[in-house]
Image (cartoon, rainbow over all chains, first blue to last red; front, side, top):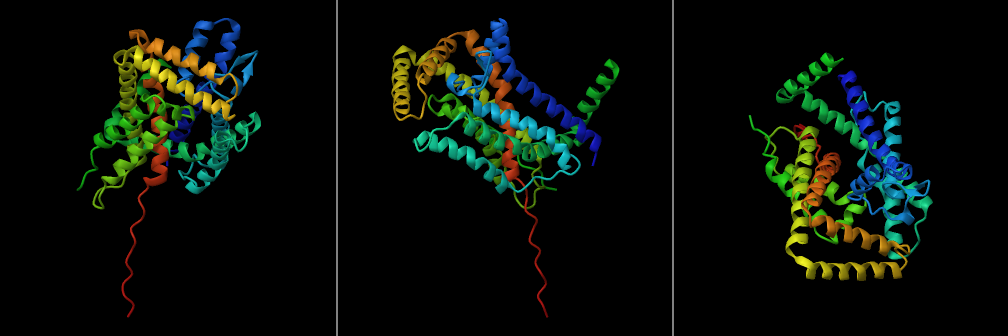
Amino acid sequence: MNTSLNTKIYILITFLVALWCAGIFAAPVLQHAGFTGIANCAYSFFSRICHQNDTRSFHVEGEKFGVCIRCSAIYFGFLAGLLLLPLSGALKRIRVPNRMLMIAFMIPMLVDVAFNDTGLHISTTMTRAATGILFGGVMPWYIVPLLIEACLQLVHKKKFQSLYSGVCEYVRKTQ
Amino acid sequence: MFEKPSKLRPALLGGIIVGAISGIPGLNLLNCCCCAGILLGGAMSVYFYKQEFTNEMPPMESSDALILGIVAGIIGALITTILNATISLLLGPVETQMMRNIMEKLMQKLEDRGSLPAGTMDNMRDQFEQAIKEGGTIGGILRSLIYALILYPIFSMLGGLIGFGMFGRKKPPIQQQPPLQ
């Protein structure tokens, strides 16, 4: 297996996920710094995927994050899991853990949501953050190996090979 | 040698699921939970694709799931934008008022039961008004389309990969043992 290519794809994925998380954090920082135009664009972008309820969001200097506590926990948990992924050797050997384990890690979050909506218990910042981090933290073990495998398959397919080599040559020339 | 089935139909079906969930008011609340509707559409496109495979065909690969998810996301983004624009432009102010009333009643019920914190209704009302205002202009529709074209393929692709992990892997064929003599 081409481990150097695996590492390159992993670094690219990590960079993109970090960029996503930075966007969530940047929205309130930009808003506070007075860049309201860009901040509004960021809020509008993330409003497509989150309710952005003020009372259910983390705040920086009085301004809410781009997404709610639960979503923030999932995304930042995903980033943390992604950073820990190489330690488990998942980059060297493409292997997806048992799917039941994923469902097991998803259950606390689903229970928290369902019980809150039915009025059986009231979700708190702690339950939202903890269950979100738990779910987001394990997802890289299920998604990233498959994503790397898929990218490797595409790179080795003939019609994508010419595109890939063209991009590599362009990068080499610009360096 | 048998070839893999065409990806067009499953991608289209997945895209319709994404578009319907994201574009129909009320159903689109599902996307507030980490784009669950979009993830579902991506996963379903992989499920539909898997159904078209026969034993003679080469097995489905993760790259197929990746492409299916992305295409379903793009189709879903287009359908959502068209649905949203149609609702805003064609249905007019009477239906908008009707939708507003339904939403307010639903939110009030949830707030009374304690499922929603106080102040959520104002927040949702602002978002609804903003969506109506944006939906009626060309700029708003274009901005909505650009955001959807960035977000939906990403989440639909993730849904596709999750779907591949759940039901895409081909089980090894059961080898028949020769009868014992």
